[in-house]
Image 1 (cartoon, helix red, strand yellow):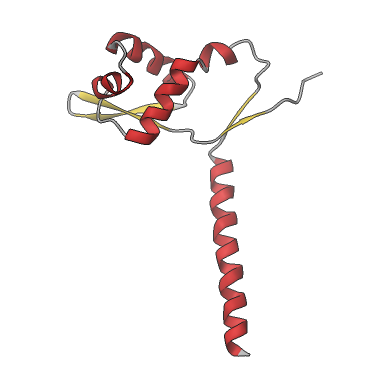
Image 2: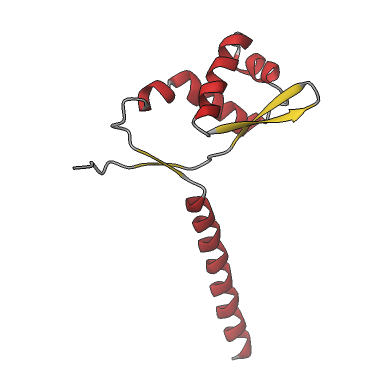
Length: 115
């Protein structure tokens, strides 16, 4: 009987931790209105590719990221600047290098229109 109660307690604790993690993710999420005219200019296929590459590979510099995605470093830097302006990524200074880091791992599209 005592073992069953302990197991129930552990299940509840595990669920609470999962819910807590989800709530933290939502608290740090970015809510976006896709009807905003900037949406498709910010989230281009190339920029989404950069976000994915940063998350999956954690490159140590912009140059490393450019090599990873096989793109010109100048174009990658310009795309990263736009993503940085929208607070989707940030840069961590490491000596002379700037390491790109994804700040917003959860982006929620809101289709609610304003009247």
